[in-house]
Length: 126
Image 1: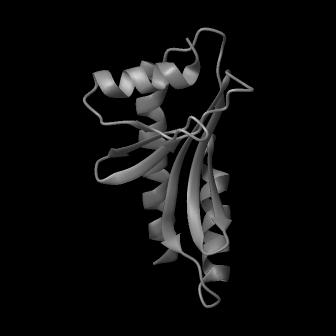
Image 2: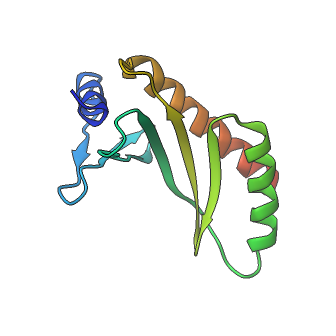
């Protein structure tokens, strides 16, 4: 079973309503009113990438402040990256897995890490 299949199965068993993107096999779901994306890395089954997309708009006026806040959060979190993509800010939880991962262990931790990093980011831009 691939990591993506394990994640989908875990989410379904936990009562989420995951949806698979037919084009790339990635999984979309909501958790606590927030959108998440589990990226299907079919060429690297031992790479775990969970994304919290578009948490903040980027414009000419706030770009510098957002970059500084992203840098601060990135320094404080081990496996979370805050990235600016054109007109929005995204958070990434990325980790290497062993050959027999237990997604029931890593997925809740990834969700908590992303939520904590988002809150830290929001605190820094205030």
